[in-house]
Image (cartoon, rainbow over all chains, first blue to last red; front, top):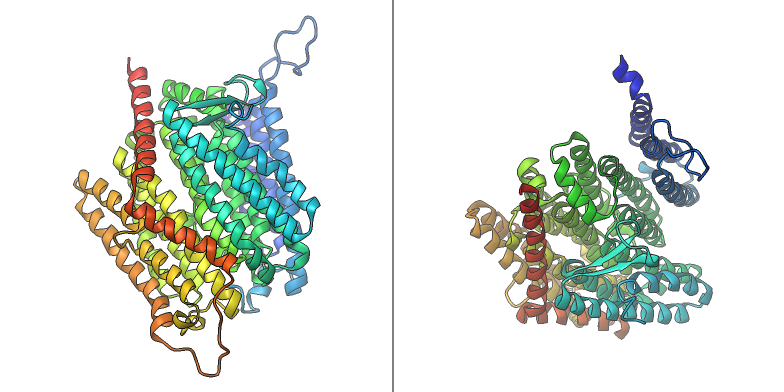
Length: 118
Length: 501
């Protein structure tokens, strides 16, 4: 039981990761796939933030009388990764807009029947 | 001043130039400026290679923060060699792109093409030069996002779906690398590659490190299109503009091969990856299947760009086969093939792009009778095609020679035989195109076709001549690749001895 409770944040990460991954693989609607990809990436952000936690540590700000801080580096790394994730989402959504204009649909099986997708 | 910052220039120059190109707007200015910047990056990476030859390693602390706290750019012969191939191919492709892009991309998007190309180049240079595992992920995403944009610029609507699928697969691959790097950081508390290497030795059989290794290997395998994870590649290369296919086929996946080499040899160490985890057998099996399955797929396609795309996946198989042999000779053959494959696939895609420029189709039936009508283009295709097959006096022969020698050195007779058998499949898929071009005549009602414009022929023939030159005088490529391979092996062996003591 403590194996589940002690690591509950990692269980959340694993659950979100697999949910996102499953949506990416199974969804027919391209927007839903982007949503799945976002959930997948968000789980990784949580993985990084979890590992920055130090027992009994406070926010990493210099204050008198506090000498245990959480590790700020993973937070900074994940800021960069969030920016990358936003950029990926933007590129993906703009591709979807152009796919909608070109094929008139964003459902994968509908434009596959139009015959000219490889 | 330039001397001091030499290591950063191949990244910084294209990165700063990209928005300037967007402002310049008019396609001729944008084209000339982008080509100049790329040529400058090529010149600086040439200098870097010579500095790396002399002093082995250049370490550059970005922003003056010393490693392992700051981000380090670390140049040795391995990455300087691959960087030279990438920047040189980028420059030639940009020369070629002017006519090709005017034909294949809407006029309003020309400046965007050059911007995205430079961003992609900056990202690829960054991946090659950085000595920091997280920084590598960031540059990987910079180059990938630019790549998705480049693929989606073609006027054919199918490129959009190809780009979207590429984006899905590419992002999953990059996120896997991010998870892997996170796990390494969790255990070791560092992101600098050398620092990681020395600390991973301390936790050799930790489950966190091993799952980190697994995530990174799968992520990089998606990026380099290793056999079962290659499905994004053929559609993307088929529907992208020709200049983009020529650039990506020679650089993007090959830089990912470099990332795999870097993680195996510098970060994790050969002993850990190959002897304890047994990954050499997995890689070897996948590489051999890639060579045969994808060479076979290449023989049954009717679109010549798809043929070349499947051939690319097969060629990646040869590179991975080289490093799965776990010897300095095998690694060297993989590195040489990265350089040589850029020369031959670049020339082949350029020739196919020239055919598309004049004929308007890249179907194999469109090649009928082109041997007479576009003699220079088809001659370039023929020589580069012979190079893919591995005929003596071309670079393809040099690659295959070192790969077969490396296999025989360890008495892997079956592998040497399989490599040669794979070349026979290349004879079939290149031969089908040549047969259409030289032995069949054009249908009588089709319009006569002229030779491609000289600005497309020039870079194409420069690559073809490089194919012949490096096939005959192999001193530059073999010196660089063998010193890189020996150096990579030495560092891992000395690290292993250091931890054993």
